[in-house]
Image (cartoon, rainbow, N blue to C red; front, side, top):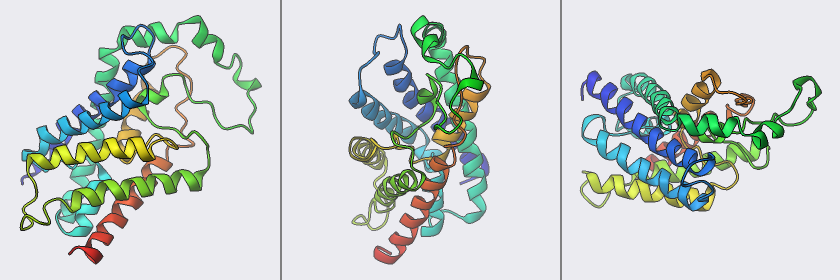
Length: 263
């Protein structure tokens, strides 16, 4: 496939992935949203449908990686040329940022209503100088719409969680179609991948929010940092390395495991 195919497919596909995935987080989180407090099941299925839609849109154009961990796993497995990897990663990051901006546009009124609510304002530190500097940094009240965060902040555990969850995702993608003469499963593969993402969210998503995709976290986190949102709080950059490093390690391990066990 051409460079333009990769750029267009990965940018649009990842943008749609983040629009729908971040959108369900916004719907569940924000005041004045009809879906507020719909809960974890809504989020996990929403992200699954987001993957399904993004992968279906981009599958015939770029192969629908939509995730640097998938791209890395495919490069190690041999299905993607190493020379194409930077273009995949750059397009995915751009698409993730576009998707996050679109979530902001859709929920503009809800973001401002939520962040100007007296309860939300009261919950924020009144004076940054008085915040306990030894405590874990407090994430902003809408950061979870844009990026992930741990329930228990332990770098080693958090990375291990992301590694294991990403290995499951990438290995499930790499092994599609092994009983089909290596031709893959076509559009059915997008459905299977979406269901795998739902399963990961339900089973492994509790500790860290299951980023399993570096740009899914980094792109929206950058957008959160630059958006002119009142009382938005911090972007928790001290944690941002975990959903980058963990999924990349997981993608690399999945590619190596595929070559050892299935090739």
